[in-house]
Length: 409
Image (cartoon, rainbow, N blue to C red; front, side, top):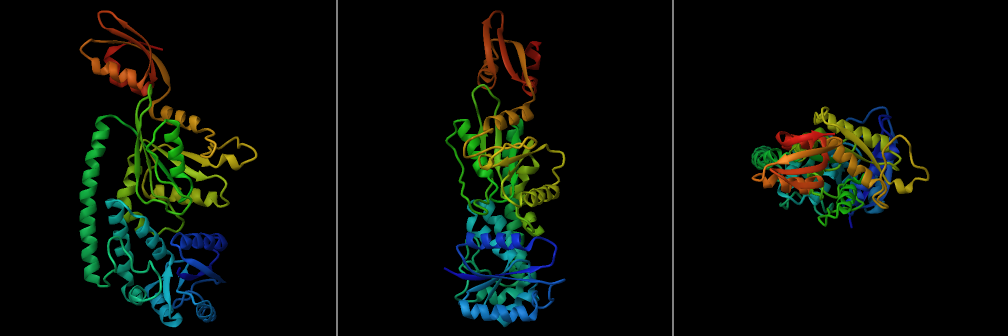
């Protein structure tokens, strides 16, 4: 197992203790052992070494004493800083962004995620070619230092990287066209979309699985208590007897200080959020930094320009609280508390309130009878000159049957 020393600089712009804890969790996500954490308080970063010269010597001694394979900085280093630190410390230097990219590279499974990770890697490397050359070619340090999706090493050539970026962007554009085709089909079928968003490891996948279990679905999604358990957008069509259908997606988790180019690279994945009819913002309600997590997610949503889409905050881990909060909406994925309430909220938000409707359906419109039996609560069926159906449905469902309505109440 690789061993790492973590280094953070307290510039009084964010909570250094919490940030270092998150960096430690990110490091562990790659099965790298953290042997030491070092922090320093400064007014501004050292332009050459990020931390002060004395602190660099302290880190150098620690690398030797602890036989560390790498030093990971809780920031995004400049190419010059990487080069200087590499030469001074004589070990592999990784910054926060590259660490996250390494996790992304390991977690990506689908074609879309692999392409998006590769694009983010190439865009990250482009301005850092000189500084990263030694880090990426260093032998014996860092299992994840040179791995990209489907390749054993990254070629450090500006022209090659620029060419790679163009190729990947073309592939993503083609993939987007294919996605748009399936999206148009969904619009034609009038199936609304619900997106789960939130900070990484907030419980999005667990919430989706709770909803699926409640609806007796066996198509559960992967969930694990680790950062960025999945990078792939997972979609499930929700069908329940007596209810209209909708699609729910679980998206990539967000992280504080996630570089802007990362979000740009994952626009294909995040495009589902932009096309949602409802966004459920999943928040770990017991996390000490939940407000920061909320702000981080809302910041990403702002970049995605989804202000016109309804957003509902859903706090998880209700089972860990002694008293139920009165104002916010809470659920438990362990005990299933309020999962049924959440499902009913989704239906009402997508389809409106319940209404009682009486319809007169011609005998040659049998497909409408099938839809009514599957997607509404049919109370009574009478066979006269036409088929008279008394049913309870959601208000927004009425449009499909408007020409056959006898009465509404």
